[in-house]
Image 1: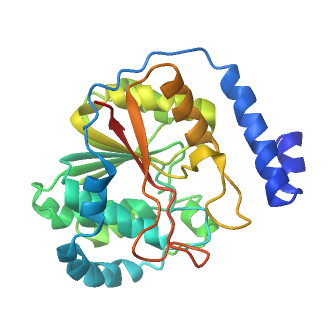
Image 2 (image 1 turned 135 degrees about the vertical axis):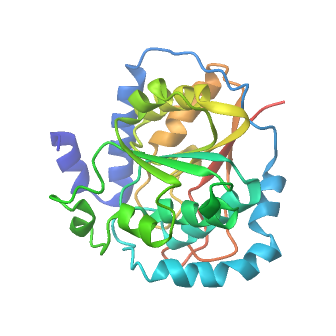
Length: 283
């Protein structure tokens, strides 16, 4: 950890947010300008996304899925995707039905199993509902270091996927995100970016992800804090995704970030707000 990181950790949340944002802005300012072609992005609006999240058929479908996945006892205290966001991911995959999904940032597999469950409901157990490639900079299934246990989870991500009957549909890759995005041969219909949240990385990840996006595809961001403001009272702000995307927009990238805002179910800290955001194309 850097000296700035140690100092920031000892500060109250507002001051810590400022310190982290200053660091992110400084690193972003030193990142060379790139090119960003947003042509592949779907042209949809927030109303269409909210329609998917309000689908009554998915409301009926959700309880047994939630009960199945809850038996994995995935921790909620490891800095991963909170339970409300996990449910939103399930709805989005079910509603938009992408055939090929890429997740950047496997971590303990919380979002991974929910995406896989949605693909299975789309027909994935037979291979017709779609595939998921999930990428992390570390081997999240390492049988020696067993990283999931360090975070308080009981099962490795691959073991949970196997118990779901989705082992042939989900592929785990150990690689830096940008390296994978620059070398992966296949295109994807939906890309979920939830890895390194620094502004400089997101600024480079988004154009690389767009080069791997099939026409009409979507990109999802996690930990997107609009205008760098807190979403939960007293919570730390992760400014990187907003800063990185905003610089691309200021440089002329024809993309729009749609924060999902309030969900119809709880997320964390007694609220229903989510940090998920959908990236779409502009007219």
